Image (tube, rainbow, N blue to C red):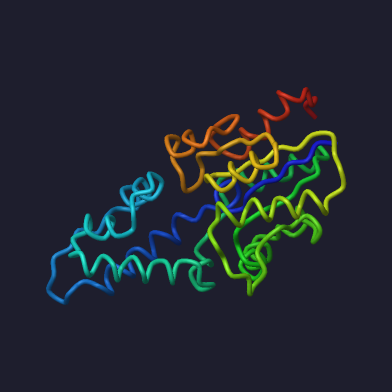
Length: 232
């Protein structure tokens, strides 16, 4: 059997509306009443995020002074993962159809995310995604887990998954950030970076995934091609 471990945000969920909404809210909160600012368009903002431009720099590009930009960045970090904002996430175009296809191929499908359990369940409930990921195929952070950083926490989550899951012939990882690539490479798992998430090609390329493709569907097609899985 082939196992596909996929990140949640990026391959499956589009978080760009959430991040842009929080950006606008934090910008409005920290500008002076009569201050002229330059609110970025969503595409401008998302390009900066995917290029990993620092939050404070996004603030100054938007017209805030240095102190305002620090407060803007702090509020953004504290706010963007709150449940009220997570409701703005939407499935990536075609992602749910791809999950259906993966089930038909009888892949062992696992989700591995830096979301906390309550954050993951919010999206699973809203979009009826539980059926793709049974309880024992969901790996996320506990609600009280103290994060140390995605590139440290995700390899630990991968280690737990590999210890608990039954052995399979072949395992692939799909993700949209350096944390996914590092987690996979730490445990000698083939990894595909996707461009449907929060990192651009240049930033993914720095961590040398085995492949980079546009989205989850392209990743599944590539896995089928490399492993000689017949079409349905």
